[in-house]
Amino acid sequence: MTAPANTVGVHVLRSAAAAGRVRARRKLYQGFGFYAFVAGFVVFCLAPFVWTLLTSLKGPTTIFEVPIRYLPTPPNLSNYVDIFGLDRFRWALLNSTIVASSATAISLVIGSLCAYAIARLNFPCKNLLLALILGIAMFPGIAIIGPLFRQFNAWGLTNNYLALILPNVTFTLPICIWTLTAFFSELPSELEDSARVDGCTRMQAFYKITVPLSAPGVFTASILLFIQAWNEFLFARTFMSQPNRLTATVAIAQFEGADQAAQYPWGQITAASIVITLPLVILVLLFQRRIVSGLTAGAIKG
Amino acid sequence: MATTTGRLPGRWAGAGLANAWARRGTQEGAEARLGLLLAAPAFVTILLIAVIPLAQTILDSLFQISLKFENAPRPFVGLDNYGSALSDDSWFNALRVTGLVAGASVAAELVLGMIIALLINHAFRGRGLVRAAVLVPWALTTVVSAKMWAWIYDGRYGIANDLLMRLHLIDQPIIFLVRPEITIWAMVAAEIWKTTPFMALILLAGLQLIAQELYEAAALDGASRWQAFWRVTLPILRPTILVALLFRTIDAVRMFDLPRVLTNGGPGRSTETVVLYAYNTFFTSLNFGYGSTLAVVIFLIVTCVSFIFIKVLGAPTQGARR
Image 1 (cartoon, each protein chain N blue to C red):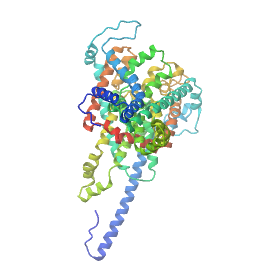
Image 2 (image 1 turned 90 degrees about the vertical axis):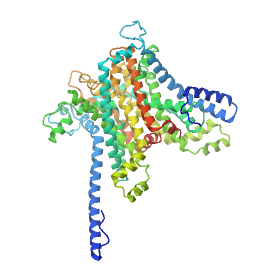
Image 3 (image 1 turned 180 degrees about the horizontal axis):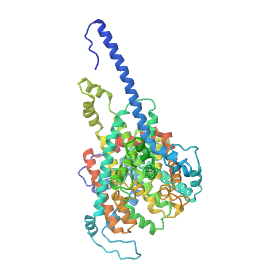
Image 4 (image 1 turned 180 degrees about the vertical axis):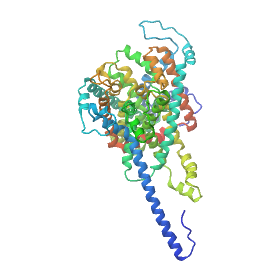
């Protein structure tokens, strides 16, 4: 690639300068091509979301116009007003919030204790436990849905938040335990040892030293768990049937709109989609670095 | 601790418990008991919500259970349900659909994800923006993404047709969700959109662990970039690739939300995945015996897939301990 350097005098300088110019130009093209690729990739990732946002801001007639009008001019918030006027939708948001945050909290408590044991202690059945956790991460929910459905029916738990919180806790445990185990293992155990020398019990050392120090890990885990629980669909669809007990995912899948006689209500569906995913998108934008490190830590170490 | 390969986990667990009991009072014994105590809530949760119901599903699969009528008899039928599955065309169709969708989408994700990861594998301005953009499809609710794609694919007002027409790639609008041979690929495209970014992210994290010196050494030895990719990058990245493939393949086999909301398995049964078919057997046909049978088979498929990957990979449970 580089110019031959063993020619004489001026030639050397000239060809070197020429090579330098070529290289600089190539670098420029490469830089340009690179950013064009990156821009294309970002558009690829965001386009469906942006299109949904644009649609949600259109008035009822603009949406169903041919040829398509890309920009909502003027923007119109009527779809958002409509969906927030629906009892079902407001319930759905509340239900999802209750289920996802309870499941996250419970999973964090159970998972952090378990993760601490895995990271710090030697105990029997440890490998069995690790295998079980890996199994849960790959477990198909359909394989337990029949018995859970019948059991929850028998116990009167259908349309009860508990029927969703319990499976969500179970299926968020693997990510919770993996993220926190990785975090606890990175904390030097000397910190706890010295606390114990000063008279703390092991549990005191855990919740006075380890937990506060791993707040970033707990926070990362809670975001991952919340997103997973918020997005859950299979169990939510099965165990909840009353209109005011549906979660957001089920509500949007069954959305019929305020006026059922009208055309399929794409305006309201897109608006509801934006409202439901906005919390997630905000979490992602604010905490992208943490989320990426949390996600990849498990995958790479595992 | 000794490795447990070749030992029965149950026997090993029993021996471990006995051991912990024998060592009670010692420092080690105290540690073992505390460990068991702390792990117990997770253990019990998994047992109650996953292991016991799974056992119940296996048991149910041996009975004929219909919830259509209250107090209907529930005779024991042995392996008859499994026999029915072997002659059920719809089930084989669902297997074929799942295999096709999982194979095509995971393969495309791996190739695309690898290209993206290689290209963005160095520091550049706006990297945070890219990372955030990548996470949007990943974090997005699958149900919502299915609705989005249904709107994009809409026959008359959908933007997909509009863009393709404007670019003169087609001169007639395509009715994406009506013709089976097109619908299945439309679904695969939606799946690829949602999961490729995540694949790229995982692979990128793996790439960043490769020491630059290795490439310099390879270049000194006269390797081209292409050779360096095959001889340096891929071998080192292998565990990462396998883990990513394992989880993506299993997710694809478990696929339910996307076909349920985008097409509901249609047109006909052309996009009906195994989980969707089993789900409909449970909750539309209310046939809990046969549904359980299909669920057990799905569980076995997932188990086989993961065993194959783990065999190739070496036990990943060991990794989680580090």
